[in-house]
Length: 196
Image 1: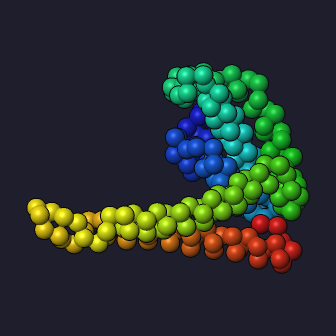
Image 2: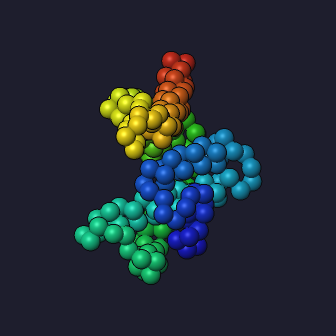
């Protein structure tokens, strides 16, 4: 395997951020955990998935610690990958094999799964508040611009501003709807005694 394979295993682009990596891992771990997925290759896919997750999170942490503030280039990533293989790959695969032998409910209590669940839930609340903020900002924008503007000495309808405010408001409503449905689903699962 090489670095690109890890992104492919998680089905994410090579410029994916840490949240995207963690969300992809959580989604895939749920699909391929051998306790749930009884397909012949599920055990190995789960191990590969854990290896990819461990490597990419480690790579992202290393890139974030880069003093220049930029991520290293592909050559540096490949060099790091070779070093990582020597030191960490076997440990990651052994840990993944242990997790694959767990019952899924036990795996859900693992740090990796709980962390991604918590981040996903926090993102939902952030999007909810962002949606409200966007709608309020659109209203303030329309109020300060006004429905009419002066052009060539005449008052004309501010169609550009109105259309922009409508689009921004729709985006805010979408943020609210998506995040609120995820929050409700999370709460229903908690109320029914199931962990999300």
